[in-house]
Length: 190
Image: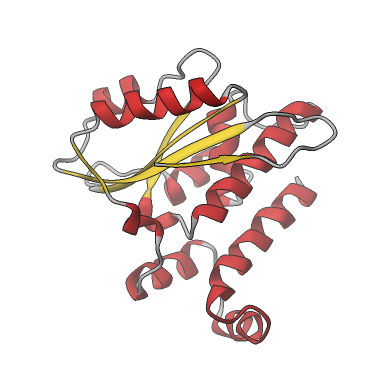
């Protein structure tokens, strides 16, 4: 389980995100998903396709931007968990964001994420979520494999030329940085 505090901004203080990769032993049914994704008090809960997550920084950046959007009253979605999805996917349309980063009926590799203001509650909500998931934590799911790189490039429409240019500056972190740029651009354009 990883924990991170979102950088303090002028409107957001003490905002936290906790997350963990999970390899499921069986796919989740729609009913199971609906139960698992219900927010826990003031803590937002989300499950996403692990193939759609470039890194820990990808998660933290999306959480930071979603928190800032809510704090400024600039949010698109009514719920923090859904605003987070929009940022993770760098997509203005919720349906499209869910298609990009949401877990599918056959998904076996997911990332469990909780977000909120009180660190203890965020961590406890993640522990509760992990206990309910049929599977085991696997932090390797947050790393980029060759197959995952292809999937991420397709999801975020990253062309070879763009990635090559980013490699000159960011080396092996080029894909991650390009996705983080997509999130930043989404924030500016929304």
